[in-house]
Structures are given as structure tokens and as C-alpha cells.
Image (cartoon, rainbow, N blue to C red; front, top):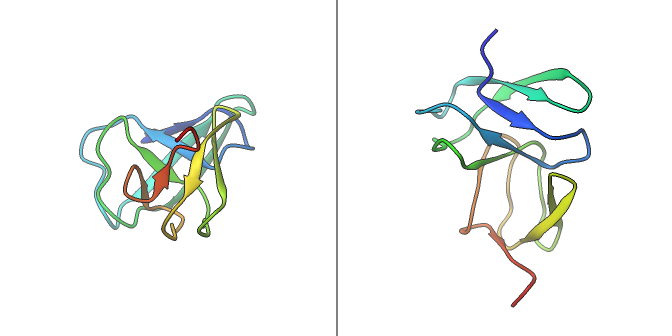
Length: 94
């Protein structure tokens, strides 16, 4: 099985894409490092390498956790398998 994204631990809400050309409609495999488990689900939209994929649905105002750290708040609804980036998550710093 190939791995298309990695997740630090089960509590994280996003994974990081580690392959080029992850396309909408693809079944993607992820590795949860701390628990040494794999997960699989369908990708909703194209996601570039190094960018984040949502591991669950998010509502506006929710906090996104990556590497056990708060990385911002959701400003537009996000579905599991969707690209999570500056268009739908903003920092809480300013």
C-alpha cells in the first residue's frame, strides 16, 4: 500500500500530503505515525504536495489541530477529504 498523506496522531484534524498530484476522486491512504495505523478515504479536490487534507468535517469557527497544535480557526465549511488551506482556515494570531 502506498501512503499519500501522513498524520502525527489520532487527535489531529489534518494530514499532510506527501505525494505529487493527489487528485479529486482518488482513494488516499494515510499513515498515523504515533499509533502506527493507516486510514483510507476519498479526496474531494486536488491537493498539492505539502498541503493539508481534512480528516473530518469542520464547521465555521472550529479549531484545526495539526501535530497536536492549534493552527487556526475554520472560516468556511470543510468536508473530510477536502484541501485545507488559507481559503478556509485563518490564524488566530491576528
